Image 1 (cartoon, helix red, strand yellow):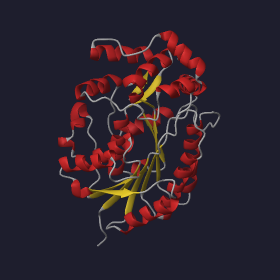
Image 2 (cartoon, rainbow, N blue to C red):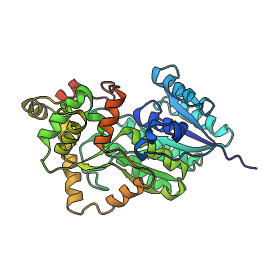
Image 3 (cartoon, rainbow, N blue to C red):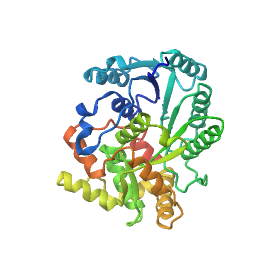
Image 4 (cartoon, one colour):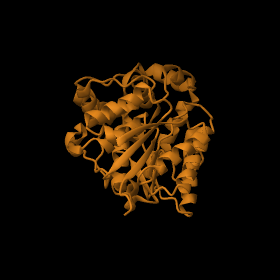
Length: 354
C-alpha cells in the first residue's frame, strides 16, 4: 500500500513567508492564535516539513524547532541545510527528501528579495533551478511565491526583482506543459514595510509619492504562509492557477486612518519634506511607486480583468487580515519587526541601493 505521508520542502523556511508557512502547517488551528477573527487555515494530513536553511544552528532555524515543540509537532519537522547558490547541494536536498517515506510531495519557494536597486540574476536562476528539479522529481504541488506585477504579463519594468520573478513564473508555465503542477502566489505590498523605523520612512515616502486616490494592495507576510498551507491541504483546485494575495486595495490615507483608530495616535512618519528629498535621491523607490501607480491604473481602467478572479481564488483558501486587523495584532503582540527584515535600511532609502 502506498504511503499517504506528505513531505513538504520549504525553501526560504527562515524568512517571513517560509516561517509563517511552517507555523501554519504544524500548529493545530485550535491552538493557533491566528484562528482568532476567523483566520483559520486547513492543514494537509500526515505531513512532514523539511525546512531548508543555510545553517541549522541559526537563531531563526532553531526558533522553527522551538515553535514545533510548543505545538507537540517536533516529530513533523526536519531542518535540512543547503544554499541556493550551490545547485549540486540543492539536488542532494531533493534526493534526500524524495528518499523519505512518502517521497517528495510538495515544495514551497520564497526567494529572498535581493535588495533595492540590485541587478542580480541569482533570484531568477534559483527559481528556475527549483522549478526544474520539481518537475524532475515529480512534485505534486509546487508553490512559487512571486509578486503582483504592475500590468499582467508585461515585462516593461526596470525593477529587476520583478523581472526575475516574471521570468520564473513564465518558466513554471512552460514546465506545466511537461507535467509540473505549479501554483503561483502573487502577494501585494507587505504590511511589514510600514512597521518600525523603516516603516516611518515608508509611510512618508508613499504618502508623498503616490496620488491621493491611488490604492495599494496590501498583504501581511503571515497570511502568505496561511494561504500556502491551505493550498497544500487541498491543492488540486489551484494547480496551474494564480492566486492574488491582498486583503484589499487601500489609499495611504486609509492606511493612516486605520492605524489611528487602533493606536489612538497618528502612524509614525517623518516630515514630508524629508520624504520628498528621499524620493528625489532614490530612483529605485520611485520605480516602486511607479509600479504601484501602474497597477492601480490597470485595475481602475479594466486592463486587469482576471485580477478579481485571482483574488477570489486566494480568498477561497482563507481570510486575510486587513491593515487595521494586522496593526491591532502587532500592537497586542508588542514584538517589533527586526530592522532590515526585507533587506531595507535607511541607507537603501537614501541611495536606492542595498
